[in-house]
Length: 122
Length: 112
Image (cartoon, rainbow over all chains, first blue to last red; front, side, top):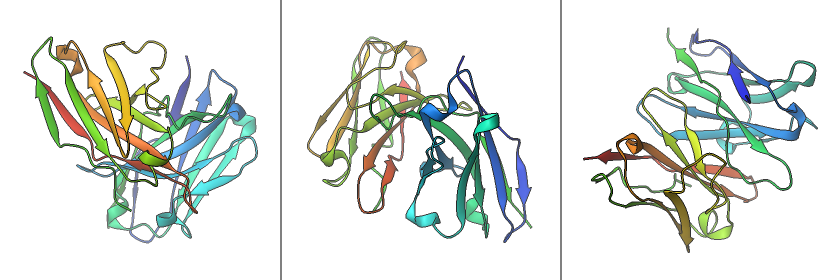
């Protein structure tokens, strides 16, 4: 079945960078957008941006611009998120999610990856 | 802009119907039909239950339905079942100068 499998939990120091991967399986990777969403402990979800795996084009939430990069490797059907200058408020579970491109976009996220806990701690 | 506004909690008895609201602005919910709803059980990743305001993905029970009026979207769950107890989140796309997807704060549904 369609799956998004993310890399494992990480602990990072303040000021460092993180990189989380998201490997897609059982569908054509370049036919669907990948979005990244996070949920801080006890908080709601926050959208971070999307990448078009076909073109590599991205749309990034204004809040993160300047310290976020989204990339992909189509040869291994994997998307990545890099977030730099980490602060304590970046502690969260990070999710990758899929959104269809055709016949037209619908901004419905299905499925979700299992989530990756990133903890910022000194 | 702030997140979409959802009630913190709602409750209902088995067999009843409940409605969860999600209020945005004319720049997001009121501007397009890109409203989605997600169900999240404790410790699990969210599951898409409604997209495009009213559409259910394959396999989602028809007890779940969505609607929209102006800047407010709604999720209705009919014939409440114990397994419906979960958190529910709404989202809306905003095609502003810098595109954005807004989330609601989430609503905890308790089945009494």
